[in-house]
Figure 1 (cartoon, rainbow, N blue to C red):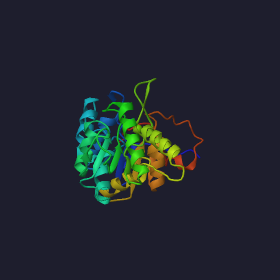
Figure 2 (figure 1 turned 90 degrees about the vertical axis):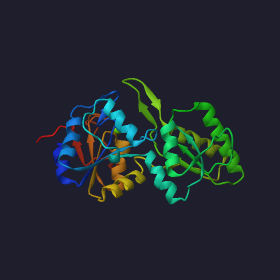
Figure 3 (figure 1 turned 90 degrees about the horizontal axis):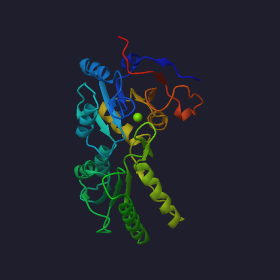
Figure 4 (figure 1 turned 30 degrees about the horizontal axis):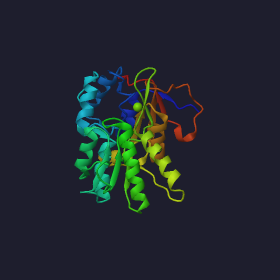
Length: 285
Ligand SMILES: [Mg+2]
């Protein structure tokens, strides 16, 4: 069954709050996407409730807003409206009483700042095994192989001694697109790599990362709390993250064709089935 092709006006009318993915919906590579500025401007002008929901765990909301602006998104986007997967570290630390915990953070400065804001103390896997939390936030910002191997070795030593460590993966994305024909490995791939290594060494124990971003429910729970409603719709370009995540959380979704997925791919499993299809963010009214 093909979902109905609609205009974005219908979503504004039908839902209390819009959840909007950033990459592939508002911006793409180095540019803002067509109609994105007018759409956000319209939401601002009419005081419609919306949040940008992104798996970014390496930039603070202010930095994310600045990067969209730099790409040409002309409408004002308040950092308060941006929910990043990195910002979910803050409630996670509160919930698990991790203030003051020693944390190894794989990612650039923005990722470190999220952990500091959550109350964590940054330590190096090269210098200590006294580590309560490992947060894999990004593929950049550190010497890649050396840091991953030092983290893996540190965790093996801790697991061997039966010591608990919280393993966190705010951004579970496996890959990202650099340009038309080039791709990069995202932090989710590092999480999978480490999990496979744990699996080889510890046959009878499961050491797994807690995943916070889309398609997992923590980011949708935070969005729902912030919006103070469950009458939400997720607008995204990715079936595996935006649409599957909305379905798992039990809210409606709209797949937009500006990103990687073409609308013609119709033979979808029910978990990936969007409620609606959108050609663009162009307003009818
Ligand atoms: Mg996207």
